Amino acid sequence: MPNNASPRHVHVRTHATRRAAPCAAGTPAASGTAKSPSAGSTPAPESNASSSSAGDVPAGSLPTTLPGPGLLLIKILETRGLVMPNGTAVAPGGSTGKDEQQMPFAIIEMDKMEVLAKAIEGNPNNGVANWQSRANFDISRPCEAVMSIYMPGPNRTDVPLGVCRIRPTFTDQKLEEHWLPLTTMDGKVEPLGEVKVQFVFRLAKNKHLAVEDFELLKVIGKGSFGKVMQVRKKDTGRTYAMKIIKKAHIVERDEVSHTLAERNVLTKLQHPFIVPLKYSFQSAEKLYLVLAFVNGGELFHHLQQEGKFSEDRAKFYTAELLCALECLHSFNIIYRDLKPENILLDYSGHICLCDFGLCKLNMKEGNKTNTFCGTPEYLAPEVLIGQGYTKTVDWWTLGILLYEMLSGLPPFYDENTNVMYKKILQDELRFGDDMSSNAVDLLKKLLNRDGAARLGANGAQEIKSHPFFAEVDWRKLMGRKYAPPFRPNVASATDTSNFDEEFTSEAPTDSLSEGSQLSEAVQQQFQGFTYQATEAIAGSIAAGSMMGAGMGRADVSGSYAPQRQAGGMRNPR
Ligand SMILES: Nc1ncnc2c1ncn2[C@@H]1O[C@H](COP(=O)(O)OP(=O)(O)OP(=O)(O)O)[C@@H](O)[C@H]1O
Ligand SMILES: [Mg+2]
Image (tube, rainbow, N blue to C red; front, side, top):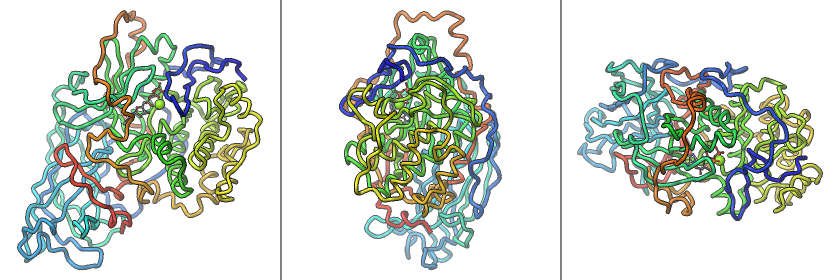
């Protein structure tokens, strides 16, 4: 065990004053820091973690690259033949064709960005509704849009009518127009009506983004690397999270390879439970990652508010995280920093894993690495011992996380870090009376100190097959088709109420770095950081094609529509 409690790359975390900066003091227990991977170096997956639902109606397949970043404009023109869940035909706009309460509306989602669109009038004679409604999306990688159509229900509950997917060709200026059939939220093809959509992709004129293209709104997180800010892209008005990293700091701390790995991992992956990266660029002093703004708050924030979670709720989050980690492992990436601070909830309550700053790439089956890194409470025994570790450290951290969600504290917690390390290596696990026997059994198997015998050592499927997850339909889970057990209180696309006031009360400025004249040789190391939309996505899990259910709020020209209760949406048809 390292005798220094705060080695480099280890994030100090206490429940009272967590999020202290990763400590620069001390030396890592061993070498083995990630090599700086070049763009495109992420190898192909060993197995494809998922595929789209069998019943999906594809509207063409997605290209793997874009000609460049741009804007996608989607226009809903008409709907016809819409059907209520009880089989009766929808009369859009009621008998007059103008009744707002009986007007269908749509939520279009792309890369965790939601836009609300509404029909403007209906024809009572033939059930055709006229929409003429537009939405635009910043595009930096090929992804599909998922359009879910609803009728406003009584007592602000919305009734889901069906869903369709838009898969543009992303050819510059090419206008595409289709009648798309609606499927059930579960992807089954039934005669549920059709929607006529037009869409066009336009390449951005200015391909080189800079911080000046964004309005800085609020600080939402801070670390030794710099800040995370909520920002608005000036041309499209869309809200994002921007992680700003000072180059000088990461050079001093020998974290260049970690930062490049973070950017490379995010560029390569599209997954329903992993934060989407929109852009990355740099200035002479700083690196900028522009990510989807995930505004349901950190799991940490919710755990702090509620003390602990019910077993069903903890199971839901663990299952979604298991899928995200399975995807990373299939691309030979170890995550290494699972903890509630790095797990965000999106507006609907699904998991969104963020912070890929400690990822280790090129970790093929059985490969070992030595870097002493992570967060003390979550360090696996083999990381502490310093004799090398494999992907299975992520299954240990999943066990610690499940334990913390069920009981309120990690199992070996102690205020004194060195005592905590001893406990991690030696102490017996203790379980509360309220934990089910399946939960206890799973925890014992994930928290097996022998990494090679740990559940998951032979792949994520081993964990998925444990009786704790007996009732989980993994395909449905990957499709985000389970209604989340908790819906965060999010009032608008720009709402930051789920973030710490300690940060949000701070003035949002991108400070000038002083005295950080970096040599040409150092600048060279950052060369590959700027995100080219033309890079192929090696790790697409076709997130969009998995989505469709569980949306309850929508963005209307930058501000959210009144919050709708999701009674109807919680039980997708
Ligand atoms: N896409 C996002 N949307 C909303 N909030 C975010 C997003 N990304 C990060 N945050 C917030 O900012 C905090 C800090 O971000 P992050 O975890 O990436 O950095 P860090 O842990 O301080 O840095 P690192 O581990 O890379 O040194 C997160 O815990 C989260 O609260
Ligand atoms: Mg973090």
